[in-house]
Image (spheres, rainbow, N blue to C red):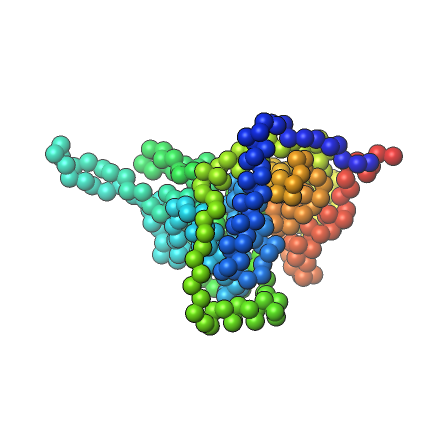
Length: 343
């Protein structure tokens, strides 16, 4: 049975023009990124879907794959405030959120809160797993509630606000794995792989000669906020929402209807944020592809980056060299679309 077709809930000309601007803006941003980043087309698409959906992104990959350069390039193109924090073992929470300092004035000494680098639009948390959990947790409130509380006073974050974090998956000495609560704050976990031989040849050629091409700035922070608003107006059929929720439920070994391989290999599955993100990111993907409704295909296409950091494998999976991506692929094969069950 075909999915129920729906149209955009708000059909005024301003909103329709905004959708066109979103699609054109995505193409222009990709064109600008490609001036600096070679290959990684699917990675760039996932990063922009997260940004247009208002989500944070965790980027993993071996050294030298341009993780940091990609994030800095996006910030430069959007011309929004940008801060980079190099996470190290001696970094303290106050180095991230800020601290109170004594200030001399006419009325005597007063305490003044000096904002830290987290008060920006795009925060690059470089090698986030190299700092202890106490400092990692300084990001939790900002990532979820878009505010920071210090000395009992709440300070709102800039809008838009994104945390784009990187981590190196192979150099584990002296690192602190992110706790599940913090991993769940990231909409996507994007994994960068090695380039193809042709792309690597292009990178070597371009980076070993004079190359100074200025970037254009087709969009700004206000545009991103408008894209986030319009994406939430896209309807999702009840069957598609049911499919997303069913997929996440099947990832939990505690669920009696989960497949046997989940019960054998998984300790913990995705939570409710996984279901929410599958639909929200699906709305963004639908608009970028020229559709005004979320499809099963959108959910399936986004399952890997949304679920891979939310499914925790047990020692049986590690012993059998089963990866999280393997489990997700099998879930996509095992969980049927609701409409397909109707004869």
